[in-house]
Image (cartoon, rainbow, N blue to C red; front, side, top):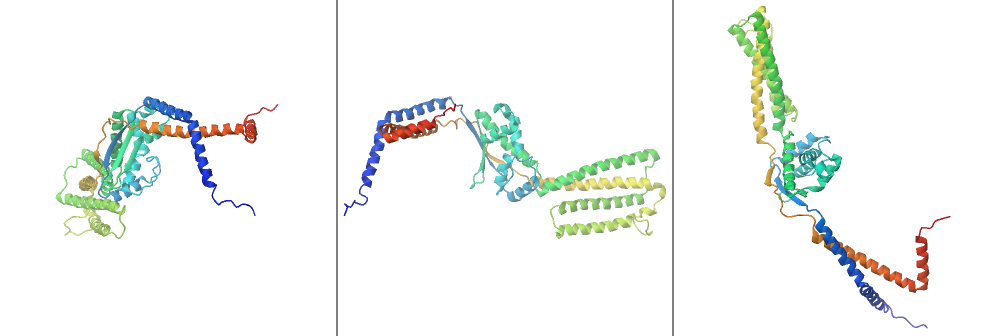
Amino acid sequence: MGEEKPLGGSRPIEEEGDILNVLIVLLKRKRMILGITIGVGLLTTIVSFLLPLTFRGETRIIPPQQGRQDMASQMLGQLGGAAGLLGATIAVKTPNEMYVEILKSRTILDRIIDKFKLMDSYREKYREDARKELLKAFRAKEEKKSGIIILSVEDRDPKKAADMANSFVQELKNVVSGLAVTEAAQKRLFFEEQLRETKASLFKAEEEVKVFQQKTGAMQIDAQARAVIEGIAGLRARIATQEVQLKVLRSYATAQNPDLQKIEEEVLGLRAELGKLESSEGTGHDPLMPTGRMVTIGTEYLRKLRDRRYYEIMFELLSKQYELARLDEARDAVVIQIVDPAVPPDKKVKPNRPLLVSLSMMIAFLVSLFVAFLLEFVEKSKLDPGKKTKMEALAQYARFRSHG
């Protein structure tokens, strides 16, 4: 029987030998390792002092707190597929994330680029490249616990960095205020348009009455005809105003909405009353004589007066509705509060010299270790005939050979 070898008895000896070999290599090449590491550290230190300083301007804002989720949904609905407003597709989970994405929109970026002439500062030929450079310098993040949004901009000029950060906030206010984000704002816009059209129609009706009076000399009408005109014009104006409110309600309410149904019933009743006054039939006991029984000679003039009075009443009613909508809009306005405006920083953020030097020295140390063990391997291979032959063959195949 052969002599039995002890199980696991040789492994600790081999491990001790490996550790000793590593220590031998490190001590043997210590000058090279230290030289590379210290040399790279010194070179990095010199370069870090030559790099331009970068400063960070920072501001903190509080987005609207009341009805934020509803406003966010309405703003996203209005943005829709407007890819021209946002530089990327909006995928937000919270209202604050929506405001962060708006800050990175193409609209705001372009305004900042134009305001601070960043095409020249960044030395970019194309606006798209300038936007990318600005996004590298700009940061916007939300503090989850407080809900505060922190905006920061980095630049070589501390004052410019602060001014750019504050400008981002101002442009955010401009963009948000330009969007109809609330129900009251939608009403205000609708009534504003209707009021503008009614004002133009009133001016036209007044001019027609004036021209008719100048041509015919008709200046006075009897009290009964005036009462009829007042009644018809008032009813028509009330109907038109109610129809405007119906359009506003139908833009966001369902057919079962009680307010919507109530206004529809009122419109039907007003139309029935208007039809009675405008009909050609009537009794002598009617307090308001139907227009069909008026003397034919004054019909055209009465119609012009009636139209003028209609637009006057219509203008008055719409003006009241418009003012109410403006008050509601002011009450529900999107208010972005500034907690800390950006001020010119007195401390640089880049370059971080200690970090640069430590990282470069660490990398240089690892590279020098690799070089040390590689040199040791090559040196031992030259002493081993078998390895020497393989190294020569490897060197031969590694060279580029020319084929004649």
